[in-house]
Image (tube, rainbow, N blue to C red; front, top):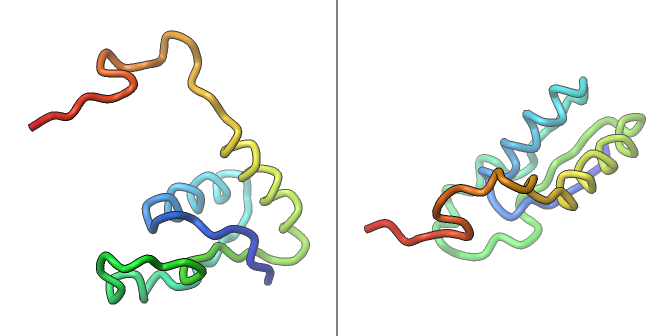
Length: 86
């Protein structure tokens, strides 16, 4: 197993797990059970995605493509780039 990525949050980790699983890559989330104990403290290096050695290159490629992706023109919501809703 190789650690291939440190997501910013558990939500990002779970989204990437789903994306990689759809490509046939089994992913282990390291630190998932520790996130709740951290509260609002920064968790640098605590959360990570790990995959089998033979799938690491392909998984890194997919995550790089995910990080480089931009929204398609016309796909922005009416509140793009964002509106605070109270």
